[in-house]
Image (cartoon, rainbow, N blue to C red; front, top):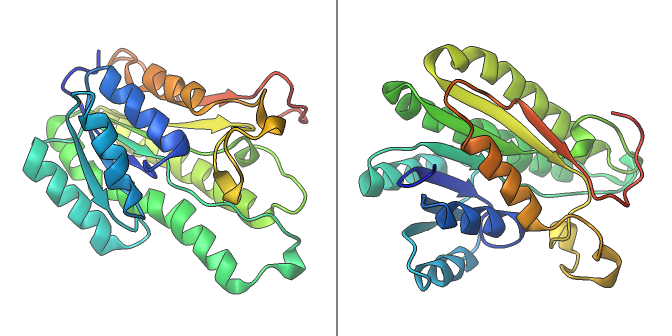
Length: 239
């Protein structure tokens, strides 16, 4: 159902972003991979070797000029934008009194400002065609709180509020907006090791990617507002 759809995936160099990009091209989509490091080009090369159509761009999605360049190159090569997956994000877990203003600002720049800038940038192109899907990979802590995670949790609550309000703004013109909120996922998140033994039973990037496909390929008359998923072993309070 995603054949020839054009999708932008931020934070696509590795981890969840790579899994999402791989699953999208597997479904026939043409994918634009965005990453903050040169590694995004290596990721693109690995997909091209499998015969997939991809474009890779190194960019900082917290900067308006970089986002504008991403959109410009996407339209120049593919002529449209059907799907945006706001996946890029960074973590920080420490007590409030040990958190610097610079750390607070950087998390909001990437986790919230990046979502705002990318979403805002694709809207004119989606509105012009009367269709489009914006999916943001948020977190289960956008619905609950955890100790030593005040800044990260605050960014995810902000993302939930932004996405919910945007969904109400644009559904009347055929654009769908939703969030995917995972619990513990086995990735490189927060400078940890993917595949570490203690993460054996955590969610995998492929699980999140499958949720993206589910949301993006829903019938046009249906919007999936939110997907919340956890590994079976994770204990957490009611949300």
